Length: 448
Ligand code: NDP
Image (cartoon, rainbow, N blue to C red; front, side):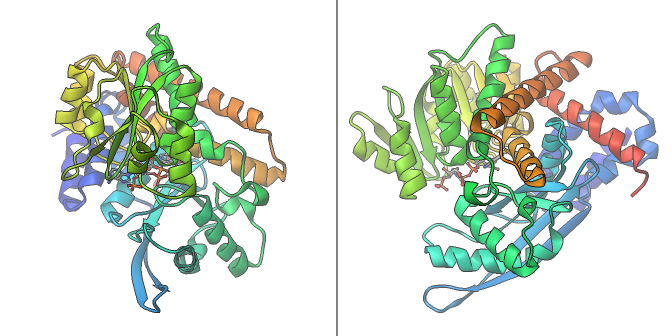
């Protein structure tokens, strides 16, 4: 058995109840085969064993009192996966599905993503099985305060810098930051990113993940002599990533015809009116279904038993921007049948492994999450820089840096894929390019 197969087998035995983590690890390890064969010194350094074991995994109780006076108890997590190239960095997710497997998969992916940005940030992830849906503003605040009462001892601007993710936006970051500041009695602005502009946030952070995804897509299409103009696009989700991916795609002349949430999707043949989506999702925190009630000619398709009707809609480009494993093999077949040209992963690991293989085998250009959605964390790192300098850059300055970073990430993925004769397999390219940097840093720092 080769070193790589051995590591994978042990990993499966040790983490058999963590399917999402195993899926993420398997995808990376599979694509490193040629690299590992070339560098026999990695085995001696136990590199893959160390790379797949988090440096630290913290789980804690979060108790809070709801508006009816009842005590509620949730579970909080922080997985500090790998800090070899900078302070741990990665978002917080508040969603009932959160568990150790999902935290570890996200933390593992984050290590690679952060390395690809070229910025000095290690990888982490955190969150809770708390469900923000239907909670009052006061309940959200009390939960965030209780969460920070424990998290504060594990984070710091040079230690670990959380940000938002599913269910954690500007409101939650505000409450978390307020509680951290109160406990620490110091203004350490760089301890969290995604902050409001009034208290240390960066312009263009809100837009960064979605815009960055489209910048990456632009580069990937350009490499094949194509562009976004007049392309028909479907975007799953209608949260932070989806909304700003839609905005940038429309700016480039693409026609976005569908968006979704966990209940279903809307189809608007004339093109999505993004101001209506923003009003429903960012202001009213409502359901995407409301769009069809407000916009003449728009149709709503209900999701049945977790299905994703959005992937049956004919399009040139699909941007899954909701959650993990939201695009499976059957849905990939549907996309190919309908003539899809490119898929850009805005969400983390939205495509199942077999669907990834199917899309690639059928010549679909695939922009992998850890490269294509790295614009969010890259801009978070720019927020940290501004906090350290106690200066703020303009929207244009940040956006220009973001564009440059995404263009470079595409180049790194392309070059790494080409170096190993993998053609346009940017999934492997992203893993190899990131691994190159992480492995060098880990080896330089000795066995720790
Ligand atoms: P939001 O909470 O803002 O939005 C999430 C969207 O996805 C909502 O429309 C939500 O619908 C939908 N969704 C969530 N869970 C499911 C599900 N199980 N099935 C179908 N739809 C679902 O999150 P973000 O936009 O911030 O994050 C989306 C994805 O992008 C995640 O995978 C995240 O990890 C990734 N990401 C985010 C970054 C960021 O900067 N925010 C950076 C890099 C990656 P509903 O309201 O019905 O739950």
